[in-house]
Image (cartoon, rainbow, N blue to C red; front, side, top):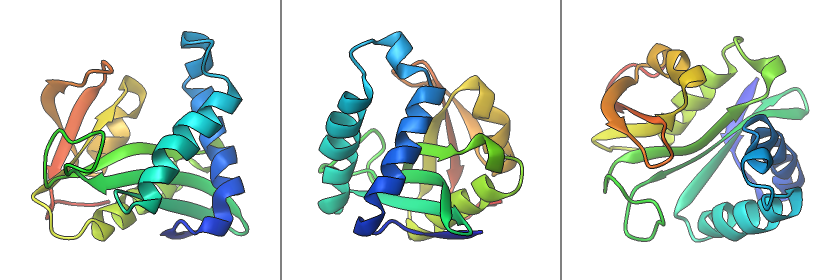
Length: 164
């Protein structure tokens, strides 16, 4: 397994993972307008990759052999971001590991890589659905006692805490 920063030549691999992630979340079932084309062009390219090119969002990929098995979109909150709820804090915007690679340390390694890449921040936070709460607790995050606008719980940790 290898975790590394996203490179422009990996767009096709990231796109495939991102669409798998959106399918697992059943986004198009919740909103039929969220077709693969819309998810690819408006969300991935029009939001995340645009913010990545501007240096606002960072992207990491997890690889096993020659295939990507996970990704994270993460950032330090600031005024250049469309999501700036805790200025100066690290934020995991999106995080995904393919089902076949789960429970093998890929997610923990990806989370640790991203936390390290954020540099000195007072803490890191994320929103987690019910299914992911145990994973984030195992990575050293705690329920912050808040609910995000998307209905998920907010989890956080201090920068110096355990990273899995």
